[in-house]
Amino acid sequence: MLQALEWSPVVLVEGPRQAGKSVLVRDLVGASRPASYVTLDDSLRLASAREDPQGFVLSLPDPVVIDEVQRTPEIFRSIKLSVDQDRRPGRFLLTGSAKVLLLPRLSDSLAGRMRIITLWPLSQGEIGGTRERFIETVFADGPLAPVEGRLTRAELAERITRGGFPQPVLLPDGPARDGWMRDYTTTLLERDVRELAAVSDRVALPRLLRILAVRSGTLLNASDLARATGIARATLERYLALLVKTFTVRFVPAWAGDVARRLVKSPKVLFADSGLAAHLSGLDATRLLGDPDRLGPMLETFVGGELLKQIAAAPERIELMHYRDGHGAEVDWVLEDNRGRVVGIEVKATSSPSNRDLKGLRSFAATLGGRFHRGILLHTGQVAAPIGEGFWALPIDALWSGKPQVTP
Image (cartoon, rainbow, N blue to C red; front, side, top):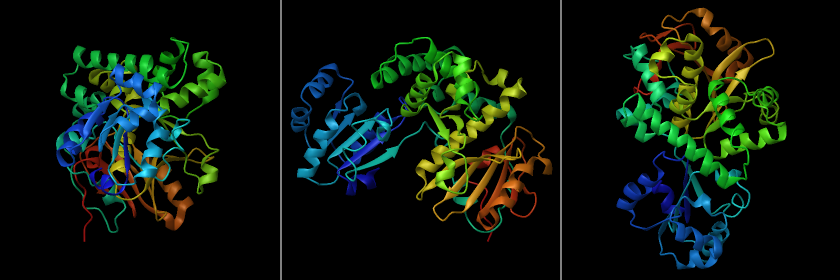
């Protein structure tokens, strides 16, 4: 972020509510680059920005941090005019709890003038103070050095149901954390979503959110969702778009060899935070461990969320996808780098993986040929080992332990 402020006149830090955006820009950035701070959660500031956006922007000190900028789409054009007159870097640092590129009136206003940084909830490495090197390692050349995992299944279930939002990470499992999640969901639906669009149905949207939480890690079937929720198809599509805009749900595209074909295949539902998905599904750590039918999808959601966070911090462009062919072979998560190299990741809620668990990865590797760089089978056991040429079984905590290293 500090680097982006060195060369871009406008930097936007976007991500879900309560992910830590305000703390980051006020404490970290403020210590290195002092700036005035304005929040649009203040009703007087908000009214001023909406009634006279140009006058509001002209009145701001320079440089300035504007918090919760998605509440006033009107000011983006005024920021553009100001930047066109003065292109000095670092003038505006914005935060927003909605995906700006998907919002009308905002996406085109600052094209070429704004750097966007996505801040997801805390990763497991950030929580534990470990530098994560998983993506860097799996795309490197050479074999992996086997490293044993240290995570028990009970500890893993706790991490899944805790999630990564900073405040519930510090709260004990039980009423305190459940209360936070409940309040978060209420604020999300009653304020954030309704500020983006007029949503009159106060029953259908919460029901849709709970069903999506239960189905996280599965393919999106919009027709079935419409039947299950009783929501008209056109309205359903609008509600899904709102949940994407607020960083609540991500629809991960299918890998299909080229971008055009990806767009016509079913995406996979991914809740951005496994803790929120578990809460909406009625699962705590004990219930999750006792329900193998739910442990698999929730583990897949947890891994997908960790990959999203590491991708956001990666120095190069990495795409997150999934794979499924017409014969039933599938791979849970697919990573593709800007050189076209592909890593397949299969997630299994077993402590004793076998060659049978590699069926989807082997089929995927045969389809890709030389583009397939490596296959990874993540499991709940302790052992890391090669399981065939180009394939590795790794414990789940290899995602954030800083290991496995590539051997020389």
